[in-house]
Length: 513
Image (cartoon, rainbow, N blue to C red; front, side, top):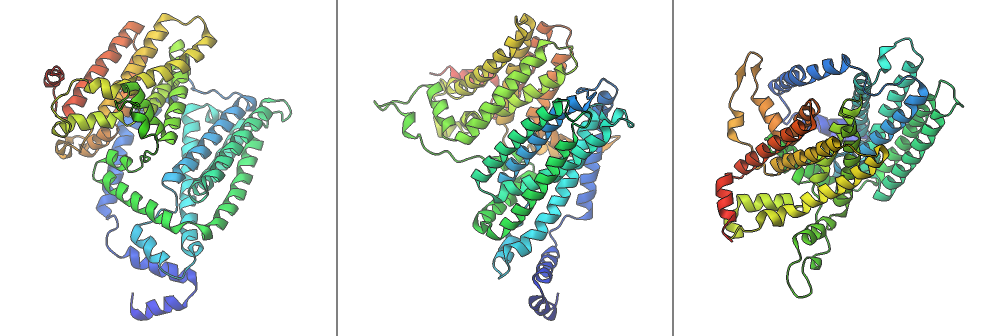
């Protein structure tokens, strides 16, 4: 771009000036090359062939997990899916919204006399369009795999389902933008309104007032909500907090760098909330530290949002887990079992920072002294008790509906919780990316070193999925419990190896009290 072209761009309208800046930035030479895109496509194809294709074949050759025989049965499911998608989009926008830019590019734009609407508006529209297409593909794919909606092309339920998917694809990107640029109060009001509308539409769809068209109101309300929220959100672009957006962009750029270099857990650490308050509550009036459980509870309350999310996931996971193990051979039992275990796994990492404290003490022993007595009790007492008690409380409340509970169901639930805690221990003991994972793995499908790195990034989820599915296919409950104990023991051994300790040396050090 020459000096004359820059001068012409300055004298042009704001749209041309924004285009000139973006064109100049795009030619800096740090964009992904053709080889980078080719490797990404190759790795995606390998993941689809090795993991996705067998799962799709298994799901499509078995009975539908969520049968939808009429609009009255499909209306509550559609309302629940729409509400969950909107809430997830709002939450995602609070951390990584559509207006997150490269820090340098945002600095260039914000340093000019251009209004934020001129340079943030086109970016938001383009990204919302991509998000809408992705949401539509994801919802249709989920409906194709989980339900029998597409098994009867001539049924009247199919066009209603497609309309609902289109409505969700329209409202989800707008909720994503709304979650980033609006205040917490506005987001809470939207979440409550979505819950109320979903409940009302579910009741309306279950009634006989609409006949066989119970899904049309869901699609219509989603489309109208997308239009209203979109107009209000784009009007708010001119009042966006550029300082906060700059901080979000800088943090996102740093997290992206960590993720691309193989340390995804370091990237996620950037989004951990900062603890505040309750510092004096860790100490008794006489100056002594409180007990292990009291310390863990106080540290959890220092991040109230994280603790609330942990409680929600643990309660939901415990209930789903109880329904899944009550009748292992039922149609929706295995999905409920898997979903409940995953929810407990996610909630177990948010009950406090004691997992990271244990990792620090194991990896940096000289900084914490040589007296290791009570390390495991001090760091693991709170997460183990909190996860077990919260999930057990929700599971017990759910089991009341199937009273009396079966002994094998209790054994399966206990084994699943133990398995989840072992997988969480394996994940939290992760440090830096082992260089051995980058070595080439030559197979008939090509180099699978990238696949090994991908599995290492999500090893906790992989262990939970494999362990729960293995337990579900065991012929007896004691065998499933033994399998869970075996997987948990392997997770403990592998987690200790990651921190540089062997079980023998750790037990020797723990004995030095």
